[in-house]
Amino acid sequence: MDEHSIEIDSKYHIKIVDTLDEFRKLKSIWNDLVGNHKSYVPYLCHEWFEIWLKHFLKQDKLLVLLLYNKENLAAIAPFLVKNEKFKGIIKVKKIELIGNITSPIRSFIVKTCDAKKREDDISAIFRFFSDKFRSWDIIDLNSVYDEFLSINILRNILTNYGLPNTGFHCFNYYYINGINYSGEDYLKKRSKKLRENLRRRKRNLEKKGKVEFNILKNPEDIDHCFSLHYKVRDKSWKSKDINAEFLKDFAKLAGTKKWLRFGFALFDGDPIASQIRIVCNNISYFVSTVYDASYNEYSPGSILISEMIKYLIDIDKVIEMDYLYGDERYKKEWLDQKGERKGIYVFNRNYKGWLASFLMIKFLPIVKKIKGLKKIKIILSKRFLGR
Image 1 (cartoon, rainbow, N blue to C red):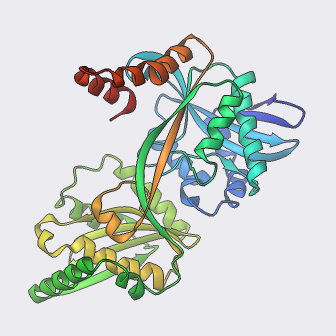
Image 2 (cartoon, rainbow, N blue to C red):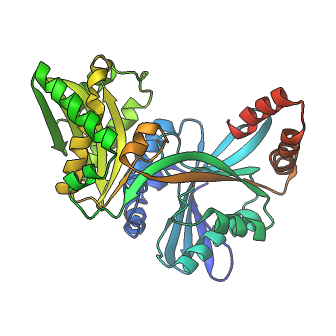
Image 3 (cartoon, rainbow, N blue to C red):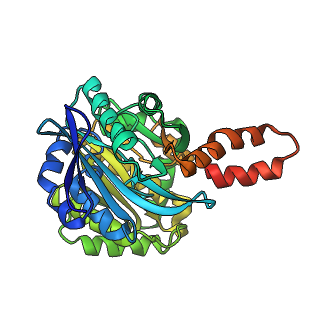
């Protein structure tokens, strides 16, 4: 099915794009809308989605919805269609926002900055799924950009259209905003224990050899930077990076956009820690960090973090930093504001939608309350909630 238009009401209509060729033609209008967003722009731009689709689309089908208010493009809903077993049990046709573990958020892209108009636009998209486009069983809204449109408002929209839904936890993350001080002042705000450990371990490392830091802003030789990065990773605690080629393509995109920051800690000329950061609209996103485990006693990763943060604040003038995902303890030491990404399962008013809804909303909560079924509860929780 090529691009075509479906009328929702006298105000809105939707055009469906479900081929890669038609998707590629959207770059200009897509990025015009993204220009109205301040946060997470690197993960919303057309080029990011093009890279993602190149690496991860596989057998899934594209379903990009262009929402028009009269003749003006108001929003883009970037979806995929999957045929899969929901939680390994029910074969369903599932629609989900494009993304995976590489996606810190999944979001609609909306032109307006007005909260009420934004709600109206998103509401029109789900009216489309409720009344016009019925060929689906479940919609998976994972890692919703809650600051953009609150989970509660989104769930109210769904409920108003009679679409059963349930929320779920995706992950926590740490961030900090409102930075209006120097890099040194930022470090002074960290815990006394962290500051003392950094000073002591850096001093001990410097006694052993020459310590240098190299922070590259949009490096010309990204391939060389990645060879160093993975040289360090191979000596780290991390397993093989299955998304290495995606990350490299994303870094090349970030380089062309002047977003990329590649940092290295060098000991006697050899890299012992590496970090990748993205800087856009005075916001820094932490992408990857690795260090040589044989230098663990010196905390080279933390030493490099401190140097990069000073650079980001003093040179790049960032006012916000975001760890994107994960609530590991060390992240809290650096960024002390905690957020949560949530998701929503939306169930269609058909047999499979009803069955999945019953299992998630009715059956599982009842089972969890029954005493003596601890093992069953653990199995079901892992199956349905991913816990």
